[in-house]
Length: 152
Image 1 (cartoon, rainbow, N blue to C red):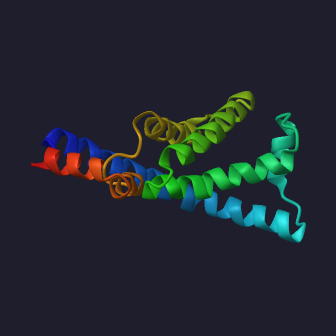
Image 2: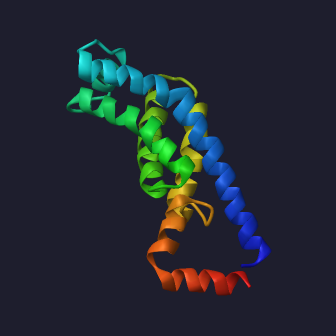
């Protein structure tokens, strides 16, 4: 494997870790806790009303889906497990957030900052330094042999 590819994969690792951990910890964690209270304890959750105001059917379901995308999806992306799928759900959720901010006359800056690396991971994949890549190498001996040959 050439040094340029190693650097690109290291860059994807840094992007996934910083972006995924910050989204999961700073936004997803609290939203997931509120979603759990809503689902399991019947507590009211203002975010459901925000989602309803956007015109989504079943706003409770979509609010919980957003909480899962911002927490579990972001965490999966950070560790590189089902990274493209987690990133896809993050991108979808951030697209809705960007639209919401623009319609409210607010800056979509933060949502855009989360949307951009999510889209990069959807397009490129998580890179060599990810659980997805590790599992693929373990599952396919041919891939492992090719990777070893490329590394030499």
